[in-house]
Image 1 (cartoon, rainbow, N blue to C red):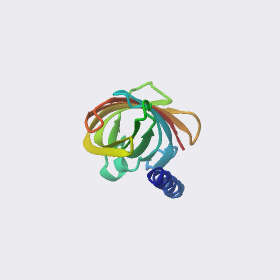
Image 2: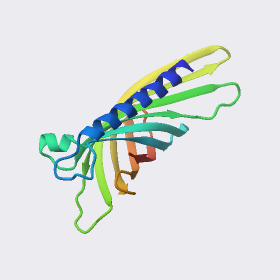
Image 3: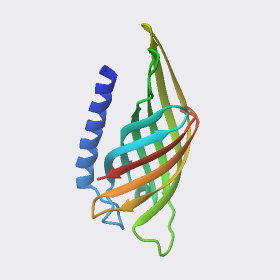
Image 4: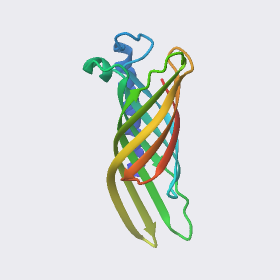
Length: 178
């Protein structure tokens, strides 16, 4: 429970920091895109992990700094709720750090498709009859998705992610960015 509370506090601090930074910084040629965005997300993952909830912080200003328009990075945290049965209580969470590149498609408005790759850190634990076991792994991500304009400062996103090693699963993530 302490780890869950610490994770929730970390997500809240990340959100406050991202909102404060986004109020001060905008991306060079696109004033409607904030340098930092933060938002909640929901993830469905294969490998019997199931449904998870979490948060994401996106830094859109990297492309401007490196003079590569459309380049962004994000970090995310998800806590999953795998089913428990027969007295077994599994727990699973993961942290992802990814870089994305926007695919510019002429004539497409309101949608920004992207591809990307990054790193994954997955932690699992299980408790049964007073005994606990845990394991952590790191791996690589390959991903693709899209961001959808919902208003001047609100975007929705959908993403498919294949985890190579680490979590070793396929994930679908949906969320909002402020």
